[in-house]
Length: 131
Image (spheres, helix red, strand yellow):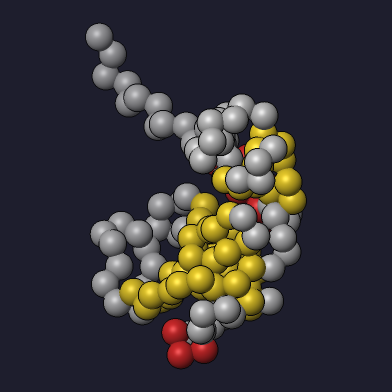
């Protein structure tokens, strides 16, 4: 038996998707027009395995948002900060809003996606910036 630390779980597909998001992004879509985020091999709506990569729109609109005053342990963000769910056509992304306060955001605010590294964890996270 070895005392070696096990390898951390791989973010299979996520790292590649995050790299792509930093350069514009993509989502997967089935022939029925259902969009979802990779990694996917099957459409979660209809079960189709015929998926194509489609370009993510350059901007999306805030669908809902919340100002966080108590951050999760180990997350690294200093509250308060704003998280949002943003619609990009047939898909939605969740991330942290940058460069806008909760008072400056409303439903429909246009934003563009980006990727940053979380200083506390080293993981990449989705962020939104004003469009």
